[in-house]
Picture (cartoon, one colour):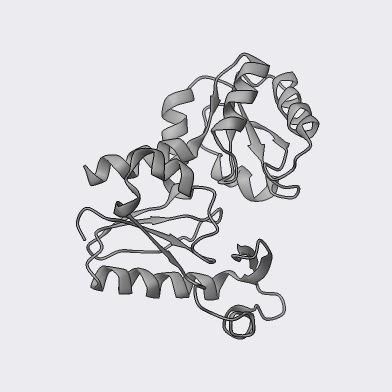
Length: 225
């Protein structure tokens, strides 16, 4: 198990945009996937993970491409149980792929990589002193992301463009908006963005565009070498 990366998701395991980036750095046989909701029929997912009134909910991806709004607290408990189980099975490197930050998840022996926790300091180390523009994947996400990026040396600006939208003009408009707000570096803050988005925007804007998913994939690969 020592030379294997286990990729853990709060939804279903095959529905991750991060997979192609991981496979650029690691052989497919060294990557194993585990989704908290794998093998569960929808009725069971609803029964086990639906929120009660007033409870904080998060969107969780299913393999059919749909999203379900589920209880963040129940998903967190399930993830901790899965991490414990994976450790008992001998896995020593666990990569948690989620756009949500689950504070308090722990691993007893394994290395637990949480992009939502490790990406901001990595980006800050790279862009210190620059005005960063953060590209978000969905409307309404800014309030959640302000806290994530609060430690940047310069308060960032934000724009929204879904990587799943085939309308390239929306992406262009959002990128130009960031540049107009003074950004001299752009960060694509969603697991849905791919190299093609980064390369396109870098050519369009003529400034550095960072894809944090690449940093995470490289870090995971380095830890397995």
